Structures are given as C-alpha cells and as structure tokens.
Length: 110
Image (cartoon, rainbow, N blue to C red; front, side, top):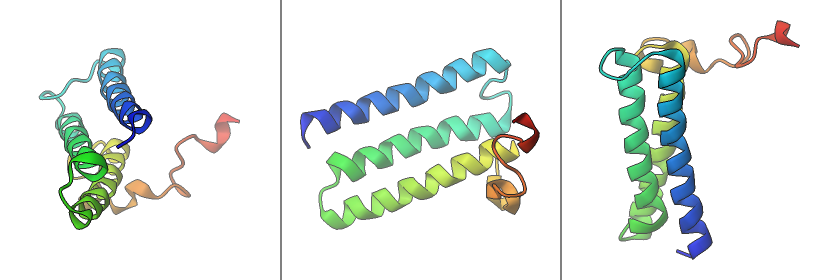
C-alpha cells in the first residue's frame, strides 16, 4: 500500500480511539461500567483489525473483500449500539439506524 494511504489509515485509527477516550472523559461514562460503551470500544478494535486486513494485511483479494464487508457491518453495528445505548444495538432496537424518525441532530435545533 502506498505510504499516504497507510499514513491516513493510522491517522484515522488514532483519531477514532482518541475521540472515544475524550468522549468517555467528557460524559463520565466508562467501559466495563456501562455495558453498551464496553461493546462499542471492543467493536472499534475489531473494526480497526478488519480494516487493517482489508487494506493491507489480507493475503488474497477475496480475504480483503470479506474483511472490508465485515468491517462495514461492524461499523453499522457500532452506530446502532451508540444510538440505542444498548450492547445488542440493532438486535435490541431495530430502529437504532432510523435517521428519519430519530435524526442525529434534532429538527428543532435549527
């Protein structure tokens, strides 16, 4: 992989973990205390490993594609866990990704 893409990959992973740590400190919710946050942080680590396999460490093209698809599914599950505040995410609240009825930014904010 070309060095700019490799550097960008490391930067994104670092920003994701730093943002997670800063958010925990700001809202005073910590992994291993709040189940949903523990799952979210662990899934973030899984997402980073799958992304690494998809972008550079996958032995074959098929393995890289499978890891990329798995990383996208893990990413969607991370979002569902974050929106539902439940460790089961979509499995507990299928509407966790419904952006029409539950927008990220409330309509009255504008």
